Image 1: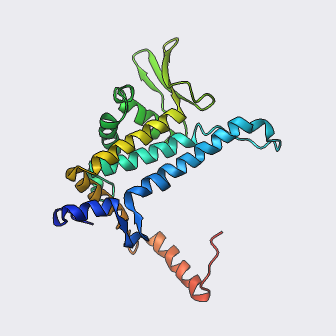
Image 2 (image 1 turned 30 degrees about the vertical axis):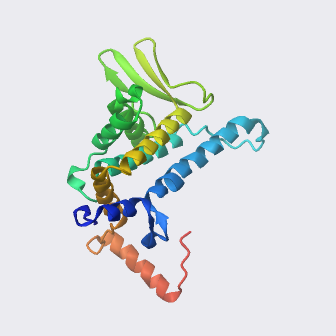
Image 3 (image 1 turned 45 degrees about the horizontal axis):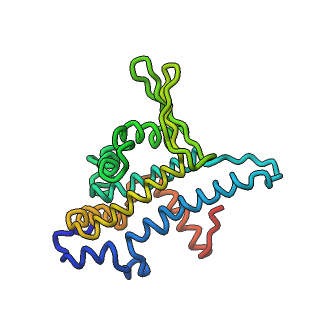
Length: 242
């Protein structure tokens, strides 16, 4: 893992923003734009295309609006950049890694005030709910139930909260949520370029992920599978996985 204390200011900046020969001249921070955000954008382009042209699909195959998948990948991106911002990852400091705390700090600094007011509810309800139970996690507060709903049908309608019969419904516009994430990452990048403390945290977090390799010698199940794989490759250099 890289130690930023042993790096000059120029070396720190170059590690984050200059092409790296170890990564085929890819700029580390650009990976966030091109791959992480790029994948989400591709998915949203597909959602928008479907919404605009769903009358042309005649194969009767079921298709959704991304209301489950998009929040998952947006949450994944948010967790990753929050770890870089705070400088703590599961690989660097496993026992003290706290994704919720990281995300709360990132949202509090870079997201609009409406999101800053309820980051714990948003993260636990959306990310933890969808990733672990494939449905947003509802909450109960006294006699009120707090629930989440995602929509993509009208991207011009802002995310909002409604209250009915003991039910508080937080309605999230997926396109709007993504725009807030993009803007937050852009602002984070601007601060990162000039803040050496943030650069140190980025380097610690990124290098802990980039340089991590898990040793499975003591894991009996995985070791057996690795041995099988190597045995097959001794017979033929190409081995079909699927």
